[in-house]
Length: 168
Image 1 (cartoon, rainbow, N blue to C red):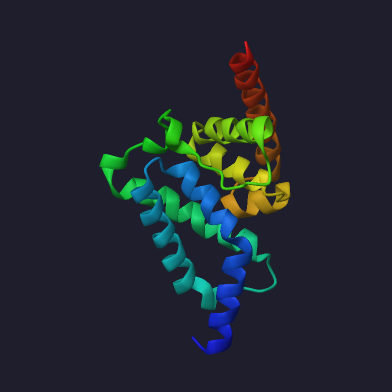
Image 2: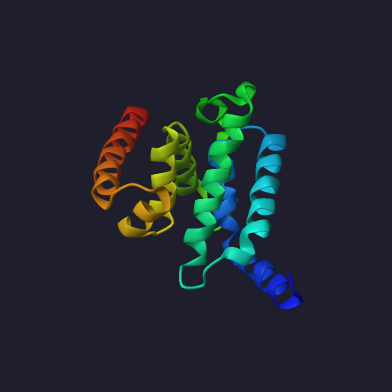
């Protein structure tokens, strides 16, 4: 890979590193596992970067790879079997210091609830929260736009119920 592409890759990764953090934090509980998964995602992206088609949004390409690597990561090792869905305090750490106090706690709670979803619904919500369109999510995950819309509605209802239960 030439120097120009290396610089482009580094710049794009810096701009979109939050995507990797969100996925890693949603799929892994323990620090070492998060680091291993992040490294595997970055390595896979680096190896695939020559095939990136600039006609598409980089963030969509990045999400697709990161989600596929995260899902494969747990399929490879049966010892990791659904640890991503375990209900522990350390599932999500959001490094967003711009939100203080209660709002930050609500965001952490939201991501904790999202971490408990099955792999497909978790992927849908991560893409949705990143502002991806239904078409983009459908394309990234290989499902129909209608399926995306239906699932988002159901997930929102489920998350709302979880928040209401948490408050009472």
